[in-house]
Amino acid sequence: MALAAATRIEPIAAAVLIIMAIVVVASSSEPAAAANKDADALTALRNGLRDPDGALASWDASLGNPCTWFYVTCDGSNRVIRLDLGKLKLSGPLAPELGRLDQLQFMEIYENDIQGRIPSELGGLANLVGLDLHGNRISGPVPLALGNIRSLKLLDLSSNDLCGTIPTSGAFKDIPPSSFANNPRLHRGAPTNQTARSMMPVRSA
Image 1 (cartoon, rainbow, N blue to C red):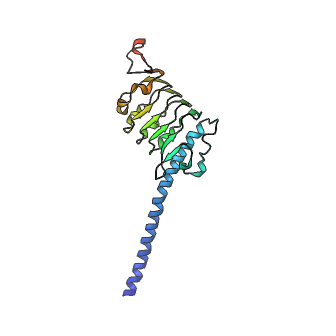
Image 2 (cartoon, rainbow, N blue to C red):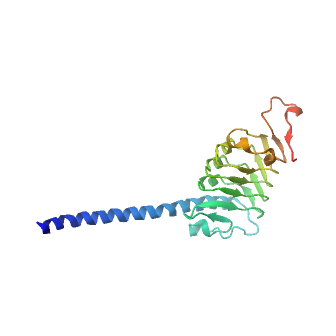
Image 3 (cartoon, one colour):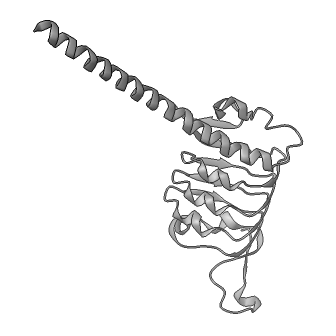
């Protein structure tokens, strides 16, 4: 009977070991998949930019893990938490795919020649604390979606070509007017008519 019991236990033990191995493999592949997702988002950004000095030459998509790339900071789980791309002579648009960097805390892409609109997808960056895009040629309205980022504390969109009105809801309630300075076509409050008096631009202090 002991032999029969042992015979029954062996297949069960083997099955348990197989299940444990599958769980370990699955859990270990999750961080790698997340890192690849971050790499894909940054690659989309790079592919849309002109980089005359080759500042982003280390952004090799074949490596998969972006934590070895210049100007990119990751946490202990190899997730991108910071981009420092200020003053690199980059030009072109911001990729909507940046909204997939769900662990990103700081995005610094200031004093370049970034053009086009701010992607509304950035409003999905739930962990974003600071967004600095000053000193570019970004146009269009300020996305209302940015107000959904509860963690957003630092915002600088000054010295661009933004237009429309400055949002005041959500995270925008705590953002000072200086964050929007030197955007001649950007205005405080919702305009009620087309007179010059109701369309006072935001100027630097």
